[in-house]
Length: 178
Image (cartoon, rainbow, N blue to C red; front, side, top):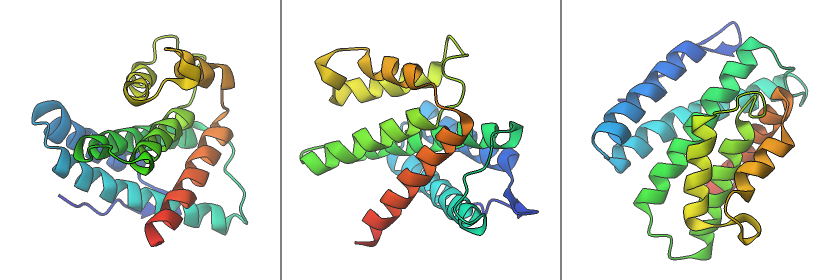
């Protein structure tokens, strides 16, 4: 189940990464609702992606990459990995503590903030799904729809999407090391 995603010429193979993400989502979420296997596979891909991106940014002296087609695809994929990994975590935990709820909210928020072109794409299925999942456990400012609207209004650039992923990656890596 664990595939090492190829890094070639200093860039992760986004086509291979997308294929593995799609395979895990189809096999363990869409088809069988096997949340444990989904989480295990997506977490593996997430960890590889985090290691790649943090190393990449560190090698660029902390500079977040400028937007182009590659980084747009990368942002879309990391948004999906982050969302579906968080969704699997949500189904594996009973959210009985405030910390559990907060971690899930942070995961959903990070996934939404990694999504590129949310203002350009009028019907954004993944943003709709993230917003729905977010609002199942928390209403932003107590109002349904505010979370999605705030993401659209932010209208992050690709660089901002990547920065959101970088900061979320760093914070989750530090939290896991405690």
